Image 1 (cartoon, helix red, strand yellow):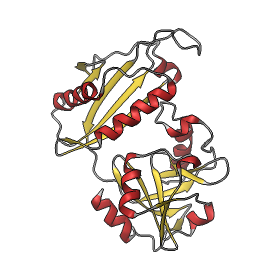
Image 2: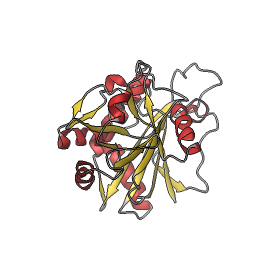
Image 3: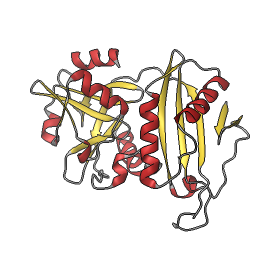
Image 4: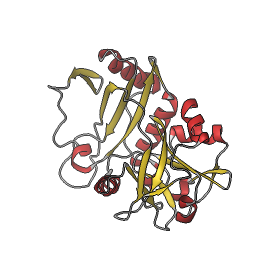
Length: 266
């Protein structure tokens, strides 16, 4: 496997990140997950726009313009001889001294990896996370930052019950998203998804699904979620139906018709 580190391709076995890198020591960075299908990078501009926005929120300079970044992503894909792939772009503030103070002149680290595209995920059984909640008031709720500990805690809670994923509520008890995806529900014949103000990440596929399904951004109570006739999750890898929540079947316990149609389209 070849990895691009600051534009230089190297073997994964010999790749090296500075042990003082703030992405490693503090989670000080952002990332994007990008899908490649039939040798075409999907939604690249939208992903780079979101990467640049997240870097701006954290005050991390992003090396190069979109053309430069696209070239590095393409080189990593080509070096790994992939036509169907998942690419991860990780940007950190780079090396730094011990403590929280940011270096006056950061030297960011940009890592690009590319691996085979996994098969579509099976329909999911999820739980409502109780171990943690999404802080919708934090600016971090709107960016893909490197500190995913809340998500990891919620996923561990799901795994302990035999579930595939967990849905996170925000501090007001409203639905935010799952540990790795946005949430859509069909309630009373209306397709709904949590608004960004409730702690939902501005997912790229979320935006596509909103347009295709004519979904409305609306705050979702736990009661609305539990009586939905269809529920599905979206992220860069596509659409994943949800068939059970906290052990209770969604609808008839099978992927819904609208969910299946969207999965085909997206």
